[in-house]
Image (cartoon, rainbow, N blue to C red; front, side):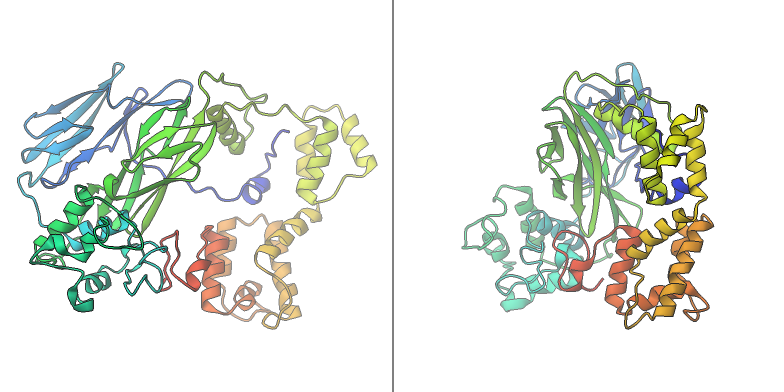
Length: 498
């Protein structure tokens, strides 16, 4: 079926599509992530991954095959897929594969400085990686077995007090760090309901043990920069055949403008392990055909990357029609990546039925169907769509859909007259082809009487602040925060305080 081209359909039926993109250094099919290398201390190595995109859209992780040249060579070394700092200074890095080269700026500072452990930026991530502060463990609203941590470490100062000040500080032994319950329980040396969370030779253990050895302090001296966001790179990948791999990198950015490679301490997971799985180090492996998302969580932030897995040697299939609008372009691009053949054009009999149902919510009459089928004009489908969009049923149908979303109905808080004024305003908004962003703004910023300003009825449907926040988040941002109304969200960053 040829998709509708009218502007109204684009605004009202297409919905909102939110896309996130990471800056990337690229040339002739070769892309390198991240686009610049900044090494801020001796303990700040940075992974890099080189991705080559073939003409058919399939991506290859060619990091191991790429040639890496550092200029000047004294600044850093390339080791195990990471740039490791050696001397302070500025230079550049060039990665070459298949005749294509990408050059990135390189900055190294404090190469000989190994800063003390930060409770905020080193210990809290270690607790999160071990699962200590999740909703299923000590991060639940009431904690576990008398020990409570804030969900995903959203309040580090409170966590510090819980670890170092409660129960006579038994959890921390500064004199003999290895005897701290904070270490003995997670390695299984002392009975722990949560079981062993890491081993004594792991980086998690080393990081926490060093912090205790240094005095278990709450970041003395200059305050540590606050975590301001994270990203997972590359933002998308198309893997061909089962067992294809792609290294993903998680980078954290801080309020002072610095960044860190936090892949080893981020929580990485896949929404469907049968399509793509990912290990603790960020190495993803493809499975059966499909599309899945990898989620990276670090601190109170969570981001995703799209991964498409297709069978090996699956042929590409061209769409049966040329793209008529941006919806077609996006759909055909997805079909191309998934190696799915687009459906053939619908017959006139099918098209006329679908057009009527989709646009005006009713079946065509026998006469209307016969007239459309008998019409031999080359643009009769476009003409039918334009004709249906001018009918009042179009406005009624989409006003009804939005009335259901916005819960426009008579209630103790919304009287009958207010309900009708609200519904009439929605119908008129559709009739005027009002953009969705304008509709949302008018609703959220409405003031005045609910009869003279119908959009103000939005605030009469639900007056409880918590429920209002929940509804606004879900309707206008597609974010579900309902769980946090009763307890800290077990899977998202939202807390009861939020």
